Amino acid sequence: MKDTFTHKGMRKKLVETLEKKGITNPAVLQAINTIPRHLFMDSGFIDHAYVDKAFPIAADQTISQPYTVARQTELLEVVKGSKILEIGTGSGYQTAVLLEIGAVVYSIERQNKLFKKAEIFFKKQKYTPKKLIFGDGYIGLETEAPFDGIVVTAGAPFVPKPLLAQLKIGGKLVIPVGEKSQIMTVFTRTSQTAFDKETFGEFRFVPLLENKN
Ligand code: SAH
Image (tube, rainbow, N blue to C red; front, side, top):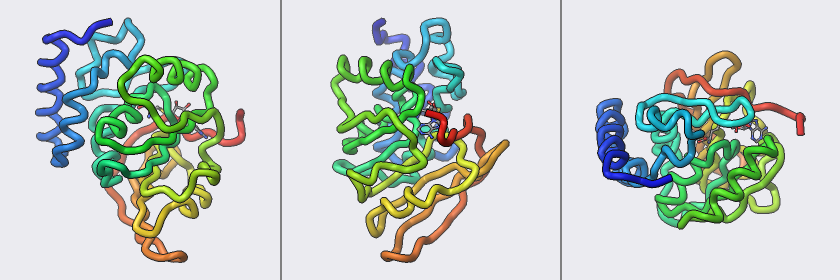
């Protein structure tokens, strides 16, 4: 599958849509403008790759809506060299956005099929995550902690304690919290024991599933 001028033109329009919806971080917009989102989708849906919508991928999961990916990345305050843990690799699109900005990315996926697919996919790309992990994101990644940022890309019924514990001081956890719909929530670790909490409106995600490996 190729990246054509038509695709590039569609991406530019998508970036304009995201700007209208309030995304301002230039590095985030640049990443969306650069990454061929159609390569992360099953071929039947390619015509929809540059519409601002979520779409089905394998294993009953979805590739997140571009606006959601942009917003979560913006809220993470990622810069070049940030050490980021992503929960829910899925299609790998959010992973690629983080890599394009220059983050060092660890990403966990609990569906084996998606994990395997992402592993093969990233071997062929110019960007490579530091580590792709097949496992349960509820427990985070203790062996590589602490992180500058942790982004959860599935709806969490509650905030998993290990994720808070694995943040550096000054680090951020960006997590959609809720069952049917979710409130985008950002926790900033202000000291060893204290966290600031802010909320950023309602979103809809597939659920973060527990203990089902
Ligand atoms: N970041 C992805 C979003 C995929 S949807 C993208 O840009 O495409 C959310 C993903 O979270 C799904 O792939 C789902 O399998 C995964 N997931 C759900 N519960 C999980 C858990 N406990 N640990 C790790 N991944 C999980």
